[in-house]
Length: 391
Image (cartoon, rainbow, N blue to C red; front, top):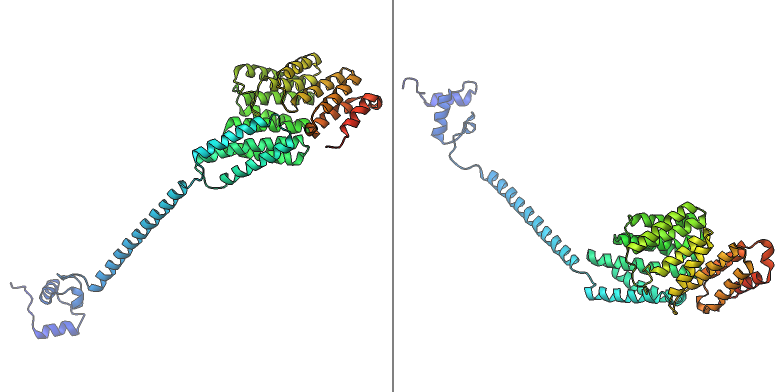
């Protein structure tokens, strides 16, 4: 090979001491093969090594790989532990199905007792029951259990609010109705949401403002989405009597028609349930609507029909019907007869049932009397009876 490089000590010395006099590429390749190194080892370029990379580089790569494996293992352990904690939490519900059924049975008994028990003793029972349900609801429960507990709280809170209203504790009653609405909304049960709003409309109906009574009843009716349900009928009837008392005759009559039509198309529930809507309750609401619409004949008709449907052991609803009959008599200018009926109705009740709500309804009769009539004997006697201190 005429062009093969010729190496001797002098030539190598020149390359080592004079960097600017570099060998040809072919010579560099031969030198790399001779010394089993790379161009950097000779001070040039190229790499002809047949050995592994330096140990330092290999150790660094191994460390990074080990670190990655360790991190992955830590994440997997953390994920597994988190999943186990969640599974334990989901399985930790403290209420068994049999406990829920027992609570439901007790609630049904309370709904029955509420129809005839005076509000003061009933209130103590309701609050004790509510406290037990609240403790269970305060712990983590499965969604289905939490829903049932929210439904129970809504119903119990509604009865508490109603009892407080009857006792004249209006501020507390209003707050409890709000609690009932919150719990009903939390349950997501439409029929229950309708119920608590329609029931809450009673407070402003009796004590004002009437606009709130109309708004609550209408909201309840719209929530029912025109389905013929007992609570939808209650909502329409509550709206009807509130509109009538507000002076909106057209709106009241329209709501009455809705209530009557839907009542014919739905199941009414058992008559011994405080949250059912049997015929006698519908007639009670229609009594209020017809009375304030000035439809005295229709009002007296529904009042008499309703009174025949009430059992002997009952609450103040029959007394409220007779007070509304007295209001109708006052509207027809039978003022003495109106005062006498209201007085007799009030005194006929057991003392524990003579609650402020009934007194407020009877006082309405005196308020609508002409000023000259308020000094008449019958009016004075009614006023004296209403002023009697509670037993």
